Amino acid sequence: MTLLHGSCLCGGVAFRAPTPSLWVAHCHCSMCRRAHGAPVVTWVGLRAASVQIDDGGEHLTWYASSPGAERGFCSRCGSPMFFRAERWPGELHIARALFQGEVDRAPQLHVFWDTHVDWLALGEDGLKRVGDPKD
Ligand SMILES: [Zn+2]
Ligand SMILES: [Zn+2]
Image (tube, helix red, strand yellow):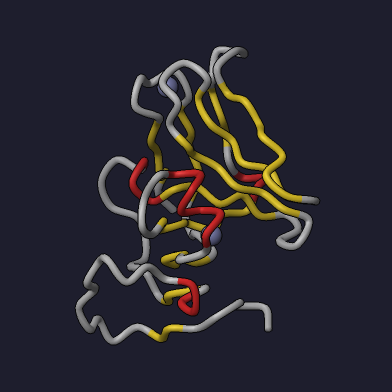
């Protein structure tokens, strides 16, 4: 077991989580795209109960982005950070780019590939490209 850790841009919201993570995946859905202002968002899935979030009690804000789903961001620097949804009970998803250093697994999958942008060329990485991972 090692402790994964990271933070938002300003450092106002930090997190710690013990390995193992549950999964790591690249998400190409349009909601992630808009929420992060990025063509693709790589997420690390973790057991929500194992994640410790330290925000000094004021910077972490949750936005209900769709029914049953919320996105957490730092209200000071604006970094999009977390995702949680009734559809993924017990899980907290944290943006991979916010982690300091290594995570215990490499990305395993591209999800919502059916809605990926055509203005970023992604090389063949050998990973499976699927639509909704729960279908
Ligand atoms: Zn911040
Ligand atoms: Zn997404």
